Image (tube, rainbow, N blue to C red; front, side, top):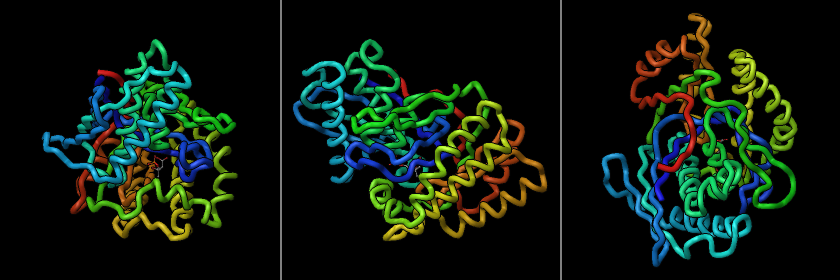
Length: 332
Ligand code: PMV
Protein backbone atom coordinates (compact mmCIF):
# COMPACT_ATOMS: atom_id res chain seq x y z
CA UNK A 1 0.00 0.00 0.00
CA UNK A 2 1.56 3.27 -1.10
CA UNK A 3 0.59 6.76 0.13
CA UNK A 4 1.89 10.28 -0.20
CA UNK A 5 1.56 13.26 2.13
CA UNK A 6 2.92 16.69 2.99
CA UNK A 7 3.51 18.87 6.07
CA UNK A 8 1.14 21.54 7.31
CA UNK A 9 1.85 24.90 8.92
CA UNK A 10 -0.15 25.80 12.02
CA UNK A 11 -1.71 29.25 12.46
CA UNK A 12 -3.13 28.34 15.86
CA UNK A 13 -0.51 26.07 17.38
CA UNK A 14 -0.87 22.73 19.09
CA UNK A 15 1.32 22.65 22.18
CA UNK A 16 0.75 20.27 25.10
CA UNK A 17 -1.42 17.20 25.53
CA UNK A 18 -4.25 16.30 27.85
CA UNK A 19 -3.27 12.63 27.39
CA UNK A 20 0.30 11.87 26.27
CA UNK A 21 0.10 8.23 25.12
CA UNK A 22 -2.73 8.94 22.65
CA UNK A 23 -1.57 12.47 21.89
CA UNK A 24 -4.94 13.94 22.79
CA UNK A 25 -4.16 17.66 22.55
CA UNK A 26 -4.78 20.03 25.44
CA UNK A 27 -6.41 22.50 23.02
CA UNK A 28 -7.63 22.84 19.43
CA UNK A 29 -5.33 23.97 16.62
CA UNK A 30 -5.60 25.06 12.99
CA UNK A 31 -3.28 24.87 10.01
CA UNK A 32 -2.82 25.12 6.27
CA UNK A 33 -1.90 21.84 4.60
CA UNK A 34 1.01 22.44 2.21
CA UNK A 35 1.45 21.01 -1.29
CA UNK A 36 5.14 20.12 -0.75
CA UNK A 37 7.71 18.81 0.20
CA UNK A 38 6.45 15.24 -0.17
CA UNK A 39 6.78 12.12 1.89
CA UNK A 40 5.93 8.76 0.33
CA UNK A 41 5.53 5.48 2.20
CA UNK A 42 5.16 1.93 1.05
CA UNK A 43 3.67 -0.46 3.61
CA UNK A 44 3.79 -4.21 3.07
CA UNK A 45 2.73 -7.14 5.29
CA UNK A 46 5.92 -8.73 6.62
CA UNK A 47 7.35 -11.30 9.06
CA UNK A 48 8.85 -8.65 11.31
CA UNK A 49 8.26 -4.94 11.89
CA UNK A 50 10.94 -3.25 9.78
CA UNK A 51 11.68 0.31 8.67
CA UNK A 52 13.82 1.60 5.82
CA UNK A 53 14.10 5.28 5.13
CA UNK A 54 15.47 7.08 2.07
CA UNK A 55 16.24 10.67 1.14
CA UNK A 56 15.29 12.39 -2.11
CA UNK A 57 18.34 11.02 -3.91
CA UNK A 58 17.37 7.47 -2.90
CA UNK A 59 20.18 7.09 -0.34
CA UNK A 60 19.23 5.07 2.69
CA UNK A 61 19.08 7.09 5.94
CA UNK A 62 19.18 4.63 8.83
CA UNK A 63 16.54 5.57 11.44
CA UNK A 64 17.57 5.97 15.08
CA UNK A 65 16.42 3.33 17.55
CA UNK A 66 14.19 5.98 19.10
CA UNK A 67 12.37 6.75 15.86
CA UNK A 68 11.89 3.06 15.01
CA UNK A 69 10.44 2.66 18.53
CA UNK A 70 8.05 5.54 17.86
CA UNK A 71 6.98 4.07 14.50
CA UNK A 72 6.40 0.68 16.12
CA UNK A 73 4.35 2.21 18.94
CA UNK A 74 2.27 4.04 16.33
CA UNK A 75 1.70 0.78 14.45
CA UNK A 76 0.54 -0.94 17.67
CA UNK A 77 -1.85 1.93 18.50
CA UNK A 78 -3.16 1.89 14.92
CA UNK A 79 -3.88 -1.86 15.17
CA UNK A 80 -5.78 -1.33 18.43
CA UNK A 81 -7.77 1.56 16.93
CA UNK A 82 -8.37 -0.27 13.61
CA UNK A 83 -9.69 -3.33 15.38
CA UNK A 84 -12.00 -1.16 17.47
CA UNK A 85 -13.56 0.58 14.45
CA UNK A 86 -13.49 -2.17 11.77
CA UNK A 87 -13.03 -5.68 13.20
CA UNK A 88 -10.44 -7.90 14.89
CA UNK A 89 -7.87 -9.29 12.47
CA UNK A 90 -8.32 -6.42 9.95
CA UNK A 91 -4.60 -5.57 10.16
CA UNK A 92 -1.69 -7.78 9.10
CA UNK A 93 0.31 -8.98 12.15
CA UNK A 94 3.44 -7.05 11.14
CA UNK A 95 4.47 -4.67 8.39
CA UNK A 96 7.60 -3.32 6.74
CA UNK A 97 7.77 0.40 5.98
CA UNK A 98 9.72 2.13 3.22
CA UNK A 99 9.71 5.88 3.87
CA UNK A 100 10.92 8.30 1.18
CA UNK A 101 11.17 11.89 2.34
CA UNK A 102 12.29 15.09 0.70
CA UNK A 103 12.09 16.92 4.05
CA UNK A 104 15.27 17.48 6.08
CA UNK A 105 14.39 16.28 9.60
CA UNK A 106 14.16 18.53 12.67
CA UNK A 107 14.38 21.94 11.06
CA UNK A 108 10.91 23.26 11.73
CA UNK A 109 9.22 21.94 8.61
CA UNK A 110 6.83 19.44 10.11
CA UNK A 111 8.41 16.23 8.86
CA UNK A 112 6.70 14.11 11.52
CA UNK A 113 3.31 15.48 10.44
CA UNK A 114 3.99 14.41 6.85
CA UNK A 115 5.38 10.99 7.82
CA UNK A 116 2.62 10.02 10.26
CA UNK A 117 -0.23 11.33 8.08
CA UNK A 118 1.28 9.37 5.20
CA UNK A 119 1.46 6.21 7.33
CA UNK A 120 -2.11 6.83 8.51
CA UNK A 121 -3.26 6.97 4.89
CA UNK A 122 -1.44 3.73 4.02
CA UNK A 123 -2.66 1.93 7.17
CA UNK A 124 -6.21 3.08 6.43
CA UNK A 125 -5.68 1.69 2.93
CA UNK A 126 -4.81 -1.70 4.47
CA UNK A 127 -8.11 -1.52 6.37
CA UNK A 128 -10.07 -1.10 3.16
CA UNK A 129 -9.65 2.62 2.56
CA UNK A 130 -12.76 4.73 2.07
CA UNK A 131 -14.89 1.61 2.23
CA UNK A 132 -14.23 1.46 5.94
CA UNK A 133 -12.64 4.69 7.09
CA UNK A 134 -13.71 8.34 7.03
CA UNK A 135 -11.21 11.21 6.66
CA UNK A 136 -11.74 11.93 10.39
CA UNK A 137 -10.68 8.37 11.22
CA UNK A 138 -7.56 8.69 9.02
CA UNK A 139 -6.78 11.90 10.92
CA UNK A 140 -7.10 10.06 14.25
CA UNK A 141 -4.55 7.45 13.09
CA UNK A 142 -2.14 10.23 12.08
CA UNK A 143 -2.62 11.94 15.46
CA UNK A 144 -1.64 8.76 17.32
CA UNK A 145 1.90 9.19 15.87
CA UNK A 146 2.22 12.98 15.83
CA UNK A 147 -0.54 15.34 16.97
CA UNK A 148 -0.08 17.75 14.08
CA UNK A 149 -0.19 14.87 11.55
CA UNK A 150 -3.96 14.69 12.05
CA UNK A 151 -4.28 17.96 10.11
CA UNK A 152 -2.40 16.72 7.00
CA UNK A 153 -5.10 14.08 6.45
CA UNK A 154 -7.17 16.84 4.86
CA UNK A 155 -6.39 19.59 2.38
CA UNK A 156 -6.52 23.36 2.68
CA UNK A 157 -7.47 24.94 6.00
CA UNK A 158 -7.85 22.30 8.69
CA UNK A 159 -8.70 22.36 12.39
CA UNK A 160 -7.77 19.66 14.89
CA UNK A 161 -10.63 19.68 17.38
CA UNK A 162 -11.19 18.01 20.72
CA UNK A 163 -14.62 16.40 20.79
CA UNK A 164 -14.48 15.57 24.51
CA UNK A 165 -14.06 12.34 26.39
CA UNK A 166 -11.16 9.96 26.87
CA UNK A 167 -11.27 7.83 23.75
CA UNK A 168 -8.62 7.37 21.05
CA UNK A 169 -10.81 9.32 18.63
CA UNK A 170 -11.58 12.18 21.03
CA UNK A 171 -9.68 14.68 18.84
CA UNK A 172 -9.95 14.70 15.05
CA UNK A 173 -9.44 16.94 12.06
CA UNK A 174 -12.13 19.00 10.35
CA UNK A 175 -11.70 20.83 7.06
CA UNK A 176 -12.60 24.51 7.40
CA UNK A 177 -12.12 25.24 3.67
CA UNK A 178 -10.37 23.53 0.75
CA UNK A 179 -7.09 24.89 -0.65
CA UNK A 180 -8.98 26.44 -3.60
CA UNK A 181 -10.90 28.73 -1.21
CA UNK A 182 -7.95 31.14 -0.79
CA UNK A 183 -4.61 31.07 -2.62
CA UNK A 184 -2.00 31.40 0.12
CA UNK A 185 1.69 30.55 -0.07
CA UNK A 186 4.26 29.59 2.54
CA UNK A 187 7.77 30.86 1.84
CA UNK A 188 9.96 29.05 4.34
CA UNK A 189 13.33 30.41 5.47
CA UNK A 190 15.55 27.86 7.20
CA UNK A 191 18.46 29.60 8.94
CA UNK A 192 19.99 26.43 10.40
CA UNK A 193 20.06 22.81 9.34
CA UNK A 194 21.31 21.65 12.71
CA UNK A 195 19.06 19.01 14.26
CA UNK A 196 17.26 20.39 17.31
CA UNK A 197 18.19 18.92 20.69
CA UNK A 198 14.71 18.58 22.15
CA UNK A 199 11.93 17.37 19.90
CA UNK A 200 8.27 18.30 20.20
CA UNK A 201 7.24 14.99 21.81
CA UNK A 202 9.38 15.77 24.88
CA UNK A 203 8.37 19.43 24.69
CA UNK A 204 4.60 18.74 24.75
CA UNK A 205 5.02 16.58 27.86
CA UNK A 206 6.48 19.53 29.81
CA UNK A 207 4.20 22.30 28.48
CA UNK A 208 2.15 22.32 31.68
CA UNK A 209 5.27 23.27 33.71
CA UNK A 210 5.06 26.75 32.17
CA UNK A 211 3.25 29.28 34.39
CA UNK A 212 1.80 30.70 31.14
CA UNK A 213 0.24 27.44 29.92
CA UNK A 214 -3.17 27.78 31.62
CA UNK A 215 -3.61 31.31 30.33
CA UNK A 216 -2.72 30.07 26.81
CA UNK A 217 -5.38 27.35 26.98
CA UNK A 218 -8.01 29.94 27.96
CA UNK A 219 -7.19 32.06 24.90
CA UNK A 220 -7.33 29.29 22.30
CA UNK A 221 -11.14 29.02 21.84
CA UNK A 222 -11.32 32.76 21.03
CA UNK A 223 -8.33 32.56 18.69
CA UNK A 224 -9.79 29.53 16.91
CA UNK A 225 -13.06 31.41 16.32
CA UNK A 226 -11.26 34.49 15.02
CA UNK A 227 -8.95 32.45 12.81
CA UNK A 228 -11.84 30.53 11.25
CA UNK A 229 -13.76 33.79 10.68
CA UNK A 230 -10.68 35.37 9.03
CA UNK A 231 -10.28 32.37 6.72
CA UNK A 232 -13.95 32.32 5.80
CA UNK A 233 -13.91 36.06 5.02
CA UNK A 234 -10.41 35.87 3.42
CA UNK A 235 -9.45 38.74 5.73
CA UNK A 236 -5.63 38.64 5.64
CA UNK A 237 -5.06 41.36 8.24
CA UNK A 238 -7.27 39.59 10.76
CA UNK A 239 -5.48 36.29 10.02
CA UNK A 240 -2.10 37.98 10.49
CA UNK A 241 -2.94 39.49 13.88
CA UNK A 242 -4.33 36.28 15.35
CA UNK A 243 -1.66 33.94 13.92
CA UNK A 244 1.28 36.06 15.04
CA UNK A 245 -0.27 36.49 18.49
CA UNK A 246 -0.63 32.71 18.82
CA UNK A 247 2.81 31.76 17.50
CA UNK A 248 4.59 34.23 19.81
CA UNK A 249 2.42 33.06 22.72
CA UNK A 250 3.39 29.41 22.10
CA UNK A 251 7.08 30.39 22.11
CA UNK A 252 6.63 32.27 25.41
CA UNK A 253 5.17 29.05 26.88
CA UNK A 254 8.08 27.01 25.47
CA UNK A 255 10.64 29.47 26.87
CA UNK A 256 9.07 29.39 30.34
CA UNK A 257 8.74 25.59 30.59
CA UNK A 258 10.99 23.62 32.90
CA UNK A 259 13.54 23.05 31.39
CA UNK A 260 13.07 26.03 29.03
CA UNK A 261 12.93 25.43 25.28
CA UNK A 262 14.49 28.15 23.17
CA UNK A 263 13.75 27.26 19.57
CA UNK A 264 14.08 30.77 18.10
CA UNK A 265 17.57 32.00 17.24
CA UNK A 266 19.14 35.42 16.64
CA UNK A 267 18.61 34.80 12.92
CA UNK A 268 14.89 34.20 13.53
CA UNK A 269 14.55 37.52 15.39
CA UNK A 270 16.52 39.39 12.72
CA UNK A 271 14.32 37.96 9.93
CA UNK A 272 11.18 38.99 11.88
CA UNK A 273 12.45 42.56 12.31
CA UNK A 274 13.31 42.80 8.61
CA UNK A 275 9.98 41.40 7.46
CA UNK A 276 8.07 43.78 9.75
CA UNK A 277 9.91 46.75 8.21
CA UNK A 278 9.47 45.46 4.65
CA UNK A 279 5.75 44.83 4.92
CA UNK A 280 5.10 48.25 6.41
CA UNK A 281 7.12 50.03 3.72
CA UNK A 282 5.85 47.99 0.76
CA UNK A 283 2.30 47.24 2.02
CA UNK A 284 2.77 43.49 1.68
CA UNK A 285 0.27 40.90 2.85
CA UNK A 286 2.54 38.58 4.79
CA UNK A 287 2.46 36.98 8.24
CA UNK A 288 5.14 35.08 10.12
CA UNK A 289 4.85 31.96 12.20
CA UNK A 290 7.42 29.62 13.77
CA UNK A 291 7.13 26.02 15.00
CA UNK A 292 9.62 24.06 17.09
CA UNK A 293 12.74 25.44 15.41
CA UNK A 294 14.37 28.68 14.17
CA UNK A 295 12.67 28.33 10.74
CA UNK A 296 10.45 31.26 9.73
CA UNK A 297 7.31 30.54 7.72
CA UNK A 298 6.14 33.56 5.75
CA UNK A 299 2.51 33.05 4.74
CA UNK A 300 1.53 35.44 1.99
CA UNK A 301 -1.08 36.19 -0.64
CA UNK A 302 -0.59 35.81 -4.38
CA UNK A 303 0.04 39.54 -4.85
CA UNK A 304 2.83 39.59 -2.25
CA UNK A 305 4.46 36.28 -3.22
CA UNK A 306 7.21 37.52 -5.57
CA UNK A 307 8.37 40.20 -3.15
CA UNK A 308 8.48 37.68 -0.29
CA UNK A 309 10.46 35.20 -2.40
CA UNK A 310 12.95 37.94 -3.28
CA UNK A 311 13.26 38.82 0.42
CA UNK A 312 13.74 35.14 1.40
CA UNK A 313 16.34 34.53 -1.29
CA UNK A 314 18.33 37.59 -0.22
CA UNK A 315 18.92 36.02 3.23
CA UNK A 316 22.51 34.82 3.59
CA UNK A 317 23.28 31.23 4.66
CA UNK A 318 19.62 30.25 4.63
CA UNK A 319 17.75 27.56 2.72
CA UNK A 320 14.45 28.62 1.16
CA UNK A 321 11.48 26.31 0.47
CA UNK A 322 8.41 27.45 -1.44
CA UNK A 323 5.03 25.84 -0.87
CA UNK A 324 1.36 26.65 -1.29
CA UNK A 325 -1.86 25.34 0.21
CA UNK A 326 -2.31 21.72 -0.86
CA UNK A 327 -4.64 18.74 -0.86
CA UNK A 328 -3.45 16.50 2.01
CA UNK A 329 -2.57 12.82 2.24
CA UNK A 330 -3.71 10.34 -0.37
CA UNK A 331 -3.19 6.79 -1.62
CA UNK A 332 -1.10 6.55 -4.82
O1 PMV B 1 2.92 16.99 16.01
P1 PMV B 1 4.08 17.35 16.86
O2 PMV B 1 4.15 16.48 18.08
O3 PMV B 1 5.37 17.36 16.08
O4 PMV B 1 3.86 18.82 17.42
C1 PMV B 1 3.95 19.94 16.59
C2 PMV B 1 3.88 21.19 17.36
C3 PMV B 1 4.11 22.47 16.58
O5 PMV B 1 4.66 22.24 15.30
C4 PMV B 1 5.11 23.31 17.37
C5 PMV B 1 2.82 23.27 16.44
C6 PMV B 1 1.80 22.73 15.47
O6 PMV B 1 0.61 22.89 15.75
O7 PMV B 1 2.17 22.19 14.41
